[in-house]
Length: 432
Image (cartoon, rainbow, N blue to C red):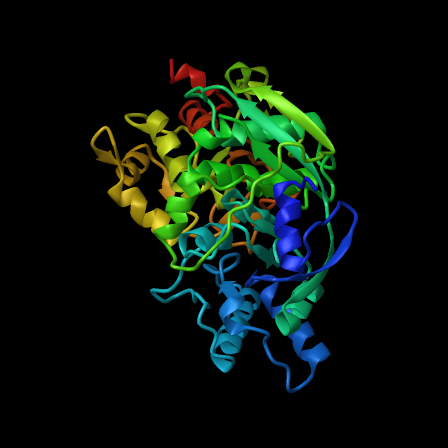
C-alpha cells in the first residue's frame, strides 16, 4: 500500500510493513538528544522512575549538547551544565560535548548534522521542539517532553501516533533575493501557527532540491512553528554525500510513493515570491518587507539554529561587504565549526568574518544566545524599548528577552540590508 516518507520511516521503526495516519505505534528510537535546559529534568525523572539501578538503554545512542544558557555567570544555568557533566562522567557517555573543552560544538540541531548523527531513514527524538531540523536529512525527527525523553532513556522506545502528511511543493529557480527563511515564512502566513498541528510537513519540488543542506535545515527547523510534528525532505545526492563525509554508519533511503495520500498539497512558484517578514508577535504574522519598510530598528540579530549557519552569514556578507551597520548588529554562529568557517570562507577574496567585523557587527561565541532570551548577561538580549529584526524562529513576547520588545523575523539578506539602513529594508535594494 502507498505511504509517505514519514509513514515508511515510522513503519520501519515499529517493525511493520504498513502504517496509517492515526495508528498508534511503539517506535524503536535510533537517537535521543538533549541539552542543558531539558537534560537535567530528564535525568531526574529517569532516576526517579527507573530506580537506583537505572540503566541507559544504549549509551551510544544518547547525544548531549550544552548550548542554550552557557556563556553566562548565572549560577542556575551553570548548575544545569554541571549536572550534565556529572551524568556523562558517571555513565561514561561518549557523545557528551562539553562547553569549555575542545569537544564543545554549539547549537544542538546544527551540531547533530555536523557530527554525523543525522542518518536518513532513522528516528531521532530530542528534548527541544526544533529537533524537527534533522528532517532535512530524510529522517523522522521530532521534539518530546522530559517525561517521554526519560522513558526513551531507560527503554529506547516511545508510543507515538502516526501523523497525517502535508506536502509543500516549490518549483522554479530561487531568486538571489530570497532564502529558505522566506519560503517557510510564506507557508506560515498561509497556514498559520496551528495549520500543521500534529502533522508531517513534507517539502518537495525543484526549488527544494536546489537548496544547500543549510537551507533545507531552515525549512524543516520551522515546521514546529506551524504546529508540525516533523518536517521532512527526502534525501538526495547532496544529503548522501554530506552524511557519508561525516559517518561510516549504514542508513536506508525512503521516498514517498507517487500515489501516497496527503492531508493537503500546496504548490508555489518560487520565482513569484517576494522577501517577507513575520511581524510581532507571531511567526505567522507575515507581510512583505516592502510593506513595513522604513520601520526603525534598535538591533539586528543573525544567529540561531535557524539563521546561524554558514550560508546565512554568506548571504549577509553579500550585502554587508563595504558597508557600515547603523544599529547594533549581533552575529552568533550556531556552532564552533561555523565560527571557524567564517574565518576560512571568503567572498570577493575577503573572509566572511572580516566582512562582518569591518561592517561593525559584534561577533559572539557559538550558542543559542538571545534566541531563547537567556539570563540578563546574554549577548543580544532584548530590553523594553527594542525593535529587533532577527533570523531566529520565534517572535512571541519575551522570546528574545523583554516582553515589551518587538521582534521581526526575516531572512539573513533582509536583516543585513536593514542593519545597513537602520530601518527594515528590502534586500532587493542591494541586489539589483
